[in-house]
Length: 492
Ligand code: NAD
Image (cartoon, rainbow, N blue to C red):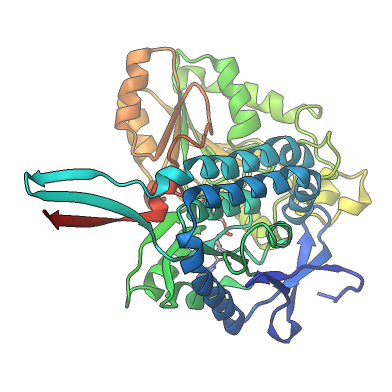
């Protein structure tokens, strides 16, 4: 790709200083709505990764020694900085990964503030242990202590949100942190690092951008790193598990999914169709959502009605509107990067080759989908796509596509719906649509999934854990997972 001039450059935050990568190496950042380079981010080396870890290691004792109240004050300041720079952060997230501005502004920024404030509120709980009387002369108790240096590795689909849930809770519990955003969409995280530079003492929060394949091993293997939290793919999780196998360390793995949205014949179909069409898989960031309901399991008696309802929604240009991602009226953004764009296109073709029926969509490319906007012609646009099949065994029903592609599969009985829903290697989320309360409870208990939503979808909150089972990972980015228990016994 030709190197452009006059592009804004962003820097790492290491030990309280804003720095480029050693030797000035840079990676181009692409605006996925246009396919054009718009900024540059550091291409950090192993040496830079070690510097970030050492800065966090150096800062740890003093940060740990602060009272929870003092740490909470910094976290509240971080929330304030995010709120007062919300417009700019939303715009950077939108330009860098294509998530439409109406959602980054009104959805993302308030959630970020909520996460940082929630971590501040929970800071005093983070180190609270239990008293365990063992005998009249023996007192047992537990202390909850921070791990030390925590490395948080984040994906390109939700950079600021994953930055928040890792850094805020780890810092609240007394750890120091190195965040490594995806090299595919690092601008918003690097800019947030700059905004937070003076909010935390030097080295407490570090942000370093570089290719995971080059600096990932260094970041996770380094002996000063006590815990690693990854939000990303199963392949990266395996690499991290291998890299840390010699000296195992605790991991939080928030990975992919193949989540089922299950519609029974007694469901409120109108509500279910609206949820499917707006915030379950056909979203403002085009289904690049870990909990995306990529399988729609629908009772055979209502499958045509549901298919027509979703089609009507997707075909309505007022409800599903492509366009400049910075335009508040645009509802549907592009795919965040070229390689994911190609992956999704090939999955749509694969589904058709495997015999799935195309119910809606299937087209791609700005030139085809937004023909009146030549500036968006080279963007990575994919039409929301609905496929239908009788078989859960197709690869498009088993593998994570991570885009605006859902496959409908009919079922006849509740047992069959459960078997289909549980019939993949993943277990991140599931939706159940029914008006039968007993069935709702039976389904909740039968589904192998970290999250189950009944008559709603993708509802997460700071007071609920969020994690997966099976190949969707383990552990949660919550305050409890960022401290460890020490057992103490005093013989009186
Ligand atoms: P990815 O695994 O390719 O990359 C994630 C991060 O890991 C990036 O920062 C990358 O640079 C880094 N990385 C890559 N190789 C590494 C290595 N060997 N060692 C250490 N780090 C390495 O994932 P992605 O493509 O950026 O994101 C999409 C994936 O993330 C999807 O599978 C999606 O389901 C998952 N995801 C899960 C959740 C969740 O909460 N469960 C949320 C969002 C995204």
